[in-house]
Every structure is written in structure tokens, then in C-alpha cells.
Length: 190
Figure (cartoon, helix red, strand yellow):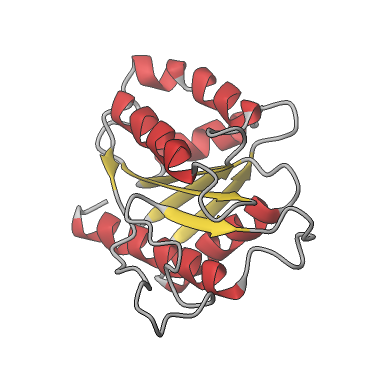
């Protein structure tokens, strides 16, 4: 069975909700999925590091703060230098997702950070594989309304609780993204 590890940081609960949607999509695609939260101090457990080492695919998640990942995610990324040195994650499938308050909010910069991290680890990046909802008839809750190809994006208004955001369309996009990661991993025999 394909094993996926989703490692993420969430500051206010919105990105956690998005991570849970990616998790649900990967589970629906018949994968074993570990959901790993980076704590408020930027740490994960030894068991979580072991899960990342044995995963076929790793999905990174972080809110977009000031045009990039949170400092907690960055601390995790810096700590990944130990598996980097041994190329433990080499040829694993990689993907990423992010959430911010603004429609744009420089989310693409966050995904590029995750992509670069994956390339440092010699991983194979997976995009959304979804066409954008960009026609006149498109509605805010359509899949991939934010039009991202590099990874899953979500938007949660700055005054919305985690129960109110991300919106249903962004969460459905995250589920489809989780499913795609599993499908790609299976194609690569991971």
C-alpha cells in the first residue's frame, strides 16, 4: 500500500483544516496516510521523522506568512538537513499546499519554497493536475478557483475562524490534490 506523510504547520487552524482535507483525499485513494503537525516550536517527534523516512510521498503544508512559509515550517525544513545529507527522501513524491488571508497573498512564493526544499532533497514534485476555474461562469467554491498548478492553494478571510475557512471549494480542491498525490505515487511504483 502506498504510504503518504503530510507534514504541516498551522498557526490558527485554517491550514490544519486544509491538511485534513488533503488527508481525506489521500485516504479515499486507498493509501496509508500519516498526518504530522509541526508544533508551535517548529518541532516534530522522532516517530514523525521515521514516518517521513518510510513514506512514498511527502506533502508539505504551511500558511503563507509575509510571502513565505511560517518560521515553524522553516525550522522543520532546516532540521531536514539530516535526511538530506543521506538523501533519505531521494525520489520520493513531493507536493505542497498553503493558505493565506488574501486571494493572492504571495502563496506561490510559499509553494516555490516547498518546491525548492523538495528539489534539495532530490524529490519528484507533483502539481495539482487541475484546470483553473477561470471562466465567467466560475463561482468562488469551484475547484481550483485560485488557479494554482504548483500546489493546492486556499484562502481564509483574516477574520474567519477555522470553522469558517477555508471555503468548501478550496477544501474540495485539497481533497482532490491528496488523491492526485497518491495516484502519482502509484504510477511511480511508490
